[in-house]
Amino acid sequence: MSQAFTKAMARNIFYGGTVFFFLLFIALTFDTMSGLPERDNRAALDGPAGEAIALGKKVWEDNNCIGCHTLLGEGAYFAPELGNVYIRFGNSTEAIAGFIKSRPKDGIPGRRSMPQFNLSDEELNAVAEFLKYSSEINTAGWPPNVKG
Amino acid sequence: MKYESQKTAKLYFIAAIGLFVGQILFGLIMGLQYVMGDFLFPEIPFNVARMVHTNLLIVWLLFGFMGATYYLVPEEAETDLVAPWLATLMFWIFLAAGAATVAAYLLVPYATLAELTMNDLLPTMGREFLEQPTITKLGIVVVVLAFLANVGLTILKGRKTVVNLVLLLGLVGLAVFFLFAFYNPINLVMDKFWWWWTVHLWVEGVWELILGAILAFILIKTTGVDREVIEKWLYIIVAMTLITGIIGTGHHYYWIGTPEYWQWWGSIFSAMEPIPFFMMTVYAFNMVNNRRREHPNKAAVLWALGTAVMAFLGAGVWGFLHTLAPVNFYTHGTQITAAHGHMAFYGAYVMIVLAMISYSMPLMRGRTAANSPRSQIVEMWSFWLMTVAMVFITLFLTGAGILQVYLQRFSDAPMDFMVVQDKIALFYWMREIAGLVFLIGLILYCVSFFVGTDDPEVAIKEIEA
Image 1 (cartoon, each protein chain N blue to C red):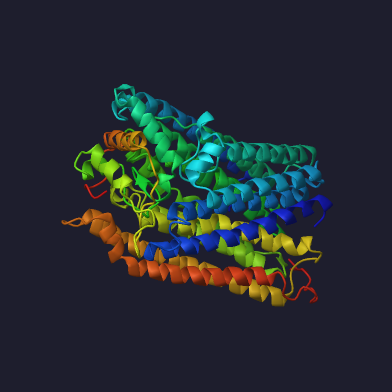
Image 2 (cartoon, chains in turn green, orange):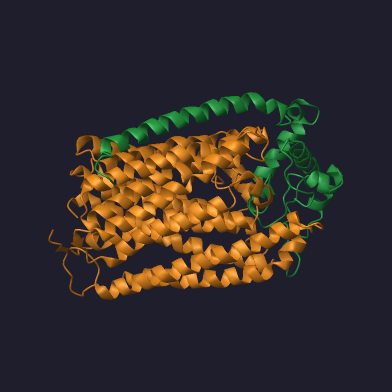
């Protein structure tokens, strides 16, 4: 690099740039937080299904579902997207619960299979409610179609 | 090696390599499960294998960063570590915690582990890359704090160089942004928003400072170029990293329920994220071309140049490929993401740790400058095997991803996820074969430590001005 561009100038760009853009990021974060109630379906968390959704998220996390599936496109890419599974399964929480419940314990020969998690009916319903809540988040039109 | 306490790094590097081998074995298991769905089912389901694969990666890279720090900081500060015993103690605690966590992943169902570790008290588990039990996460905090205190006090006591300063900033950032791993609200959008403060601000933020500092140290040592020149480059590269990368977080905020202006912020700033990587490539080659000495450790220089090139390709080019919001609308959460993830981590972080091991390990094992030419030849074979294999893993995953995007999301008659997965199996088979080549490279890498250990040295030659 040319001699006119000194180390002190590079250092100032580093500190100045970092501070400026981090502050900008914090400002955008504040704005995002104030905009979220419009989009993130938080009303459902306070509604009649709120407790089930909370339990559903716990079941989701306790069984490491993200280790195979994506949820709103984030996670592993081994099994289908679940952010819109409620819609894919015909707007039915029962269909979701029924699918999870019916997984064979020893898998399916030669094929990928979801493990049998032995969830209680309450937990099955809770996971389904959690996925219904997820499907009602405003995700700017993503995924492109119902296949996820 | 000028200071006895630098030797602390050796333990860290040995552990890093061991865990690296484990990571690759589990990668091969997962790769096979992609095409033979019932492989090891239900004993090791895919989600468990993946958790082991990704968590081992993170932990061994942390071991590598810590080892690199313990080696580099005393030499830069021109003083011994304030507490080498603490570094050794923390090593064993970290290793035990890491091994226990991975063993628990494999031995008990994840839900049982969550219950045993009382996850309900402070639920942090079950989120991608942050699957560790809360107690393990707290252990990581303790280890990192002790590490930072040790390193920070050493730097304060000694000579303050730009390399040490940038490294310390990166490490402090690593510690600070890990704290967001403890925030896990029920609100899924909030959960995801803040999760990225750990994940993105680590790998596309502060980790790049660590990468830059280690690379600068290796270049100073192996090329003999004036420190002033290298430090200027380092400043400007990490400046561009954070200027683009902080707001670049926005490329994760397109489709998770966050406001849509992030599609603009994220696209524009993350489109510039390749710039610092490109600069790093130009700079690494420039420094080596303008070298003032012939360093006999050719392997270390190869890794250093390799990391600059592969980080640019993996993080820069493959990142840009799917970072613009209109493109990402189709590629989000597909094999394209996996392709990018593999080459970016290998190029930016695996290779820089291996570069540092390559430079420092011979010195810690009592040689004056480098391993014997015989050992370096084996090591350079391992470099090419692993690097070329990773290029092909990335290309095959990219092929799989393009087809997946088309068949599942883009065509007029979109197909089900699992139907598409069957159709693209050929690419997964090819990826698995490339993975086996990677493993052969890794085995050769391990072998290289035991080749020609008693052979004579080639001395460093200074080039006359």
